[in-house]
Amino acid sequence: MLENKAQIFIVDDSPININFLGSALEDDYDIRASTSGKDALLFLEENTPDLILLDVMMPNMDGYQLIKKIKNNNKYINIPVIFVTSLDDSSSELKGFKLGAVDYITKPISPELVKIRIKNHLLLKQQHQQIFKQHTLFESVFEAISDGVIVYDEENRVTAINSNMTNLWGNIIDTDGVVGKLIQDVFTDDLLPVIDHDKEDIRALSRYIMEPLTVSTVDGIIALDDEKYYHYFGAPLEREDVTQGGVLCFKDLSKEINLQKSLEDMAIRDELTSLYNRRYFNTIAEREMFNSKRYGTMLGVLMVDIDYFKKVNDTWGHSIGDAVLVAVAKTMNEQIRNVDFCFRYGGEEFIILLPNITESGLIDAGKRIMRNIKMLKIEKDIQVTVSIGGSSTESLSSNDRDTMDNVVNLADDALYSAKGNGRDRMYLAGNNQAIINN
Ligand SMILES: [Mg+2]
Image 1 (cartoon, protein in one colour):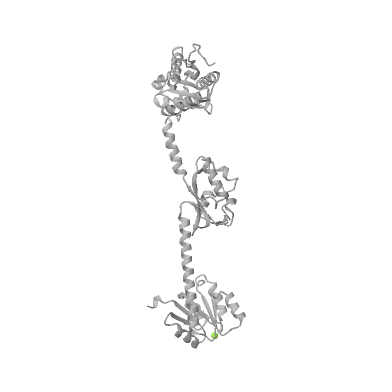
Image 2 (cartoon, protein in one colour):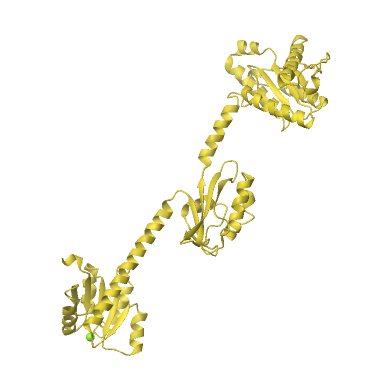
């Protein structure tokens, strides 16, 4: 039964006082006592009482000296100390409180009053411990969350930031001394343009940061650069319908989004050359055909085929053949405009889509490609040439339906002419004149 009782430690140089207090309290509490400061300190080394009743006037070490020692030690700092003394002047009382006592009881003592005061202080201590426990729990949860979290009060001032938030933003915002700052001053206008992904998402976040308590919730994805993506979520913190401030969370989605992007990329690219693949050609061709009709612009097509490629494979083997394909693909990709698309169409056959181009632009592109590929020195000093067939939406006669298939067929026919008339040259659909690069 003793274990369940709170322990009260009485320090008084008078055994009579100890007995008096002890007999008043012993039914409710586990009473321990010392008659000197020195003994009290020895006792405290081994015990942690729940409350200390401390006499002021004692020989050698008085109550004031003892409480100083108690309050200077982290181990005892949370033990409430009540002075019990015959010194009833207010300056002695003030001195006691200043030294950290929670209460000051003057003699003569009313046992009932002492009991009630002790009970109240023990209750307070218990409540403090509970709050401290909850706070510690909250802090460890707050830190354990994998998201970066920043919390602010109803005046938009930051009240807490966890270390994941610091890790996410440490390179960009000055996370030191963030607590107390306005949330608008943490995520400044200078910072937000750095973040760029979905324009609507960034606007929503910006609006939220500017006026966090007028916007209910926001969430979206933002990118800090091509590699870093964050999901953000902002919401007010409400208690009994009263807004207490809000919270803004960021989750690092870089891994997931980059994986998704690389999977998407894999689906549309040729593994060997990294050019777009034939399947993706169908998607882009349809879109560009639509744009060509809609805006009345010419859409050009170049079919490019490596001359005598079979001989390269037969002579040097397939790995050298692959090196040739990679080098040719790279060169073609360098010689087209940003708006053009280059696809690996078949084994050694490529197709290039050139939106909004003129006939002379198409010829220039073909010449550049022929010239630069011819200058390539691939492994074993292999040199290759290409033949090109060009066509465009303008090549279609009034009898042709303006479909992509028809434009591609015309380019294919022109390529056939280039191959049949000596290779290393370009033919345009509907034109018998070879375009030679020199
Ligand atoms: Mg005394």
